[in-house]
Image: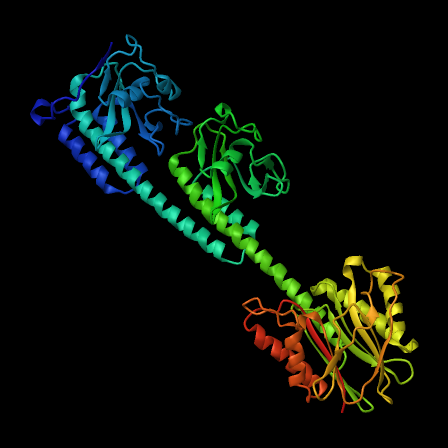
Length: 596
């Protein structure tokens, strides 16, 4: 019958017999001590200790179970029995010989298995026909570290007795020390591997890797620490309220076929909402589990959080029940933090690349725009014309030009497209072509405006209108015809500082097909004509004060003696001095004409 025996009194040599082969209990203990200290290899140490126990107990077989990282007792190895396929088989607390000593923390002797009710399934799986067993818990610092079970006497069925424990218990203590030391070494080695892999992942994230390359490295390094049968990294799309996998493995779908989940769906959705990682020991019992993979039995999910924002989720799945521990979750969270940085870095890198490409294209566009711009200064007869353009972005929506018109006339223009940047510059390039095509066949500014408007109405949207001031100069007489199409009125200033604004014309270009404009006329003698765009008067300083037309008039008056190009640059200098460190908010363009 079964009987539970308490740990006996300390072993005393005089009470023990010396076997016929001449090996005493002290010899076995000495052998055990030597084995324990002869190597650092856990397998070699335990094999030697089990061999000593088997010999000392004259046993058929010795079985060993140890506690795993989840503090679950599992079968480790056997000596004298077939342990193939038993590695890692869980021991049920309170069941069987080893499960019983785990629960009671006391040695167990079963003198006759036939007369007892002990479940010995594990022993049968090991190919043993059990008659008598003795089991001892591995105790270390008050904790159960495993159990040793001795099965049957060799060559006879003599039952194990209480006096067998006097030698078995101290021998098992050596096994407990070996198991505890191995556990400490394994933990130290695991910590070293954890730190090493995390450092490797951090280094990878710091390299110029693409997002998917970085995440793939993270996933592969994590697999060396936390086994999984399937894994996926999801990114959150706040606009569509969904999550899509950017990387997954172990699922039936193809590598490039995304897994899409609603943000409020499944365990992944729950973690995204709470920002707290979870372990699900049995997904079949979880009400929110979404069955994407039918073999999955347990799951672990951690959020990818950066600067307080959930970027995505890191999901691991296992075909085993209760496969993950709190330590596994801690590691997953650490790797998730690196994945979040990798994703953020990749996004920034991608944005930077896009920005660089745009800047490159803008520089090309600016070069093309400058190529088509007129010379800074043109002299025709007694008159000198010059202009200057200062874009707020890489390319400008402002435009100035001067070019030959009909006969010996000189056409000039300054214009501004609604908006700025590339779209405005494209419209302005088209407008330039229109003017240079129309001007040689028209004698007045109004005729140029009417024809340009007809073409623009056909080619641009209403919101893409153009304001323009167009003039035609006769360099022989100084006579000028002009037409102001909704533009800032230019200033015609006399040497004494008196001025008038040139507003004759009509509406903006590109909006109304049948609009009408009027011509304005004057003769340019000793006056200076200064044309400008609204960027020259609407510039603001840090106090949000506008430069305004009054300051602009004063600036023209202060620089009236300068030649046209020098005047343009001086006017812009006045604006920049007023604005200070504030960025230029709009394109600014000037054009000036005077007698030399």
